Length: 423
Image (cartoon, rainbow, N blue to C red; front, top):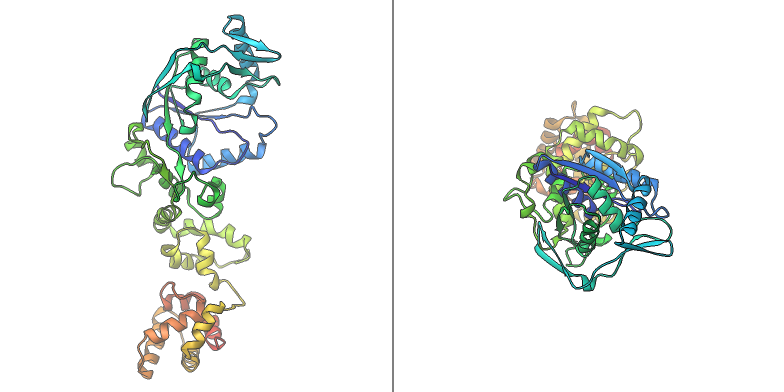
């Protein structure tokens, strides 16, 4: 049975590169009918923090990457010590003070057939004796990794290409301990749009940051799965659908390019097809936190606003930017919009429109549109000459949903007030 693992260190939050590695392991396991192991590699007791571990677990769960088995290396120190002492007793390793090192024989080639890159060869002349146990009693990365992968019966190790140089060292440890060597696959790195290694500027931030910015888990997962792998012509596909198509042999050897605009586009597709009720549930905590709504908010009205804007959002945070004018009791028009409106000189038209709206018995979509169109017909002007200035006066933005839908969402009182105070 195929068995893979994702092994993050809780010395920081789960970042995009790590999430992509976890995702590819998860998809491979599910595609092969295998198992996915989550192993927290917290051997660095000084730098490992409980809050980082919690964030990793929360982010994995949020992304939908559930695990079949869970381990923490800090709970397995006695095992590493036991195997190190065994290698010393067999003459395969030696002590250097309180440290233990594996003896590496020179003059031989270490070969492995990488699942993604094909045959890779290292010569042991380039590899020095390997530290197994450090002088402080903690295991070295490669040693604890090999012991755990062997005992957990990991069949395939899929990780970033920055680990390629670790692979021959680990193969030597497998051989010394008499363990079966798993198959290795090394994923391409993720680069920024400038061709350099991904930095915070281009998206190398924690999954938590994307979550707080209003990316949906399905949108983020969909984008990450296409960084280095292609299912064909599809750009939008669910995790379940991707599993049926996933093949490790179709993973690219070349670096994947992270593109924030593409991520936002992908996320927008998921927002558009999400149920308005579900999006509202996600937005309520954000709106409460930002003070946009109080505990006694009108749920029905809020859902109508979310419905109005969901086709225009690429992240949930953008809802605050685009729809913020609807929640502000004291509206201050942006300076740029104010200057543009001043140049239009439509104060008389605004006052006329405000008066007619005030006289109207109803304030629904049909009524607001009829009042508006009657006025432009009466004045003999193209409707566009008044639509744009009115939108600026009500929202402070040059673009947005339909003007009459916006009026209804804003409400009669505030619509009239903003028209009368625009100049």
